Length: 332
Image (cartoon, rainbow, N blue to C red; front, side):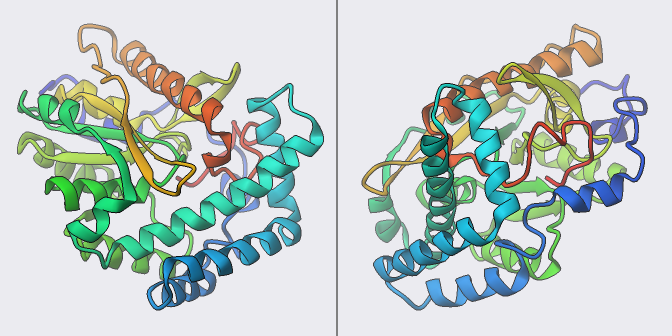
């Protein structure tokens, strides 16, 4: 464990990014979920229905509901189309709109399958998986430094945690920003806790850093999403040829602790089963200056995420103008 950097720096480094004027108001302006798909009423209703209906019935309702969302959430839909235009610059406007609708539908189905998975036994869950090779994770854990699983708002990241718990029994701690809706946050915490998945909401920097240090020292697994920065917790990378702010904390944790970063992606297949794809492990080079090492590691992850998104752009869930807000504070 490196001792030449303050623990709290894992979450906020002075000067890492200048504060945007009116950052809180600009943040509210870009949060796609406020008053839309991820508010307490809609998420709670979805949870209520999904836990009482068969999968096909939930899919049918989700199919209709996401069609309505695509047409009624006009700002969100324009944002998705704009983001996809960067990912697929050669696509026609008609193709981009089809992809945008598919993005809504994929998000709806991923939410349904995550909720449904919580009440399943291992035997019931296994048919949902088309592939899960955890050999790389086991090899990294054998080194005894813990593992930081890193992902993006891509695919069914919540279901990946379920798979690790049900199929392999790995303990898991999810770290992230609190939900904009307290009701949604409470539901998500209860759902994770039902499987023994711990949730740490980033609050007091030092306390959070010490908790993460303790988990990794015990050879635990922590998971974080990188493709939305959180205020000053930011490192700039190149993403689809454009500058973007990613979360700085995961690579900083790797720098301080020596824990490897392991990219992980839960990808829906055409038959609605899932493949848990693990990427190439990323080691944060502690012999380099802090900023250089953190940037290089985060850029390495950005490149892997970019490849996954190019292959399945409909699974990248950013319902706001992603690059337009590159200089503003975002929720993660």
